[in-house]
Image (cartoon, rainbow, N blue to C red; front, side, top):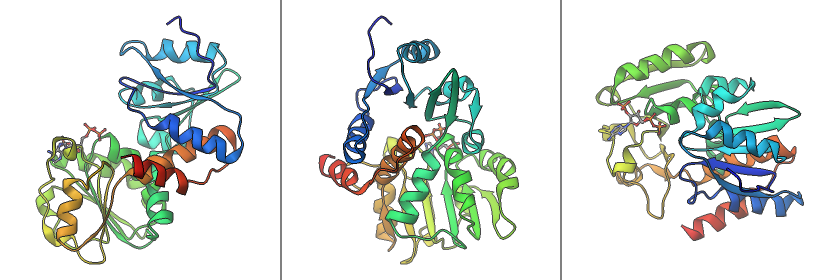
Length: 278
Ligand code: ATR
């Protein structure tokens, strides 16, 4: 805890060496002409708050927060945006004259990637969200704000999906049917199927009926890698268009950059560079 940290911005996690955020923000800073530095900061598992406070003491202006500290960042912030409150987790901190603002840009990153980059208009669509953990909860509010006709949350443990439905019912517009089910009950065809489970990490597939996919379906995996995930392979084999979560990664970073610097960076060149490096 004695190292001097000169950068104004950091990504804090444990582990952190794998994070692509410094590369992404270096691109954004160069492209927008912002004079900023952004580094990786490893916090001890029992030392997140002390690490943040030391960084603030050294002039830190903001931080991205990743695994396993998003809940601690939520607890640390003394003001929270509505989307961070709904997510129950914070991935972006802004330090402002003693204030610690907590935000969550994951959901807007997902929605921007789907709506803008993939050209898929979410309004009045039928959406199937797979998973009911932190990743699913983090994106629900921005998805509902796009006014889909139907949003079904399917999870291995159906009770957890039901809890999310109860929490998010107040955010669901009059024209949107928000419901929960187990995987086996999701059988109708959806316009958009989003994999927010961590099943891909174990190279597993949520046990989904092939009937949820059709030629007009976009199947989106929040995970990404050099190869299409097992979920994307399954969806593609049933005729769906597929997309991985690399664009979400870049867009959530762009939103953090905007929160800190008030400037919206372009994301296309960074996306292409990251894709080429995978
Ligand atoms: P995260 O923050 O990545 O969302 P999490 O909160 O632990 O992590 O949630 C993991 C999600 O992936 C849960 O929805 C989990 O289902 P359960 O709630 O039933 O545990 C889901 N999940 C994990 N492994 C899975 C698998 N092999 N098949 C289907 N769903 C899986």
